[in-house]
Length: 415
Image 1: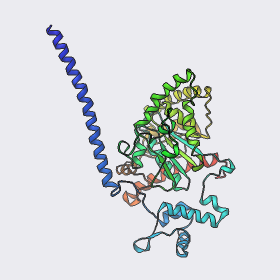
Image 2 (image 1 turned 135 degrees about the vertical axis):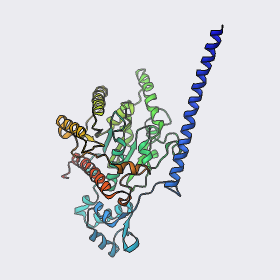
Image 3 (image 1 turned 30 degrees about the horizontal axis):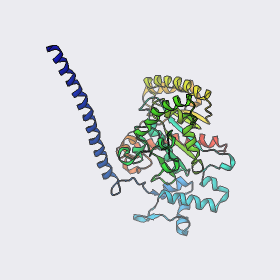
């Protein structure tokens, strides 16, 4: 009898521990959320929303592809959007001013219109490029890569849609969102791909950003619902339900807004679930990020085996898998690290030109910018050690230019 009483007491104690642990985690989540909100209020006051900095005339000229002197002449002549004038007569342009100048110059010089406005030409068969950035393992620089790529393409004059498909919502944080506070139900891509009557048009979910020409679909834990409801759909389909298969749903949603964009960049979750597979089936191109450490490379081997197996099943079920390009991107690379250099050489010997020529170097500039939920394109050069900033920006530009070049090549342009 005494033993039974002791067992009941132990069980009660264990249940109490479970409840208290559950509540403790909830309290931790609430405290962290409140602190993140307070941080955002300090960083982005008074509206608590992010805003993009103005660009110097030299930066604006480089983005447009003209000389600073020519930009000055346009300003003096009063042609196109006019800059803001600062101390010492320095001229500063907002991104929407830069895009306005692009349109003005394209109208003035029709033969060079594509130089100023590189947008795709659907009449020439240039399809919307959908780039999925993915890896099986977290910490590979996937979100850093996808966010900077989307912003680079917007700065270059393309119409861009960025989509956060990761329930952890790191890309959303970089775009200034706090998912548990800023999003309600059906505010993620899940709202456009769900199987029930609450499904929404993707156009209603897309949000404008502080980057002119860059729209965004945020993410949060709601995306995980797709992993739960898809098996139920598959079971119902076997019973005669005619709903579209899961692998076609992201593609179908994107087609409804294809006329509005030149390129879509998707930050996929670090797992091979239904979301990732659906994103891969919607993709026209794929970037696989690789941190050059042996454990990460070994993990990627398993990722590739699993991806190949699952995509073959999707193909047999009627899914189309035709990528314009698939490339491996070396991320968080330290050129002076001997073992990393050996691994990069090993990967290049295996995959050849499927490994991007430019690696994304490891730099404190990325992490320092991340402290204020910003990217390198959002912070000014003077915010860092110039050598650190220049090294990181040179690497980032080389990577994004290479991806842009592959995208333009897929449109059969000369370059």
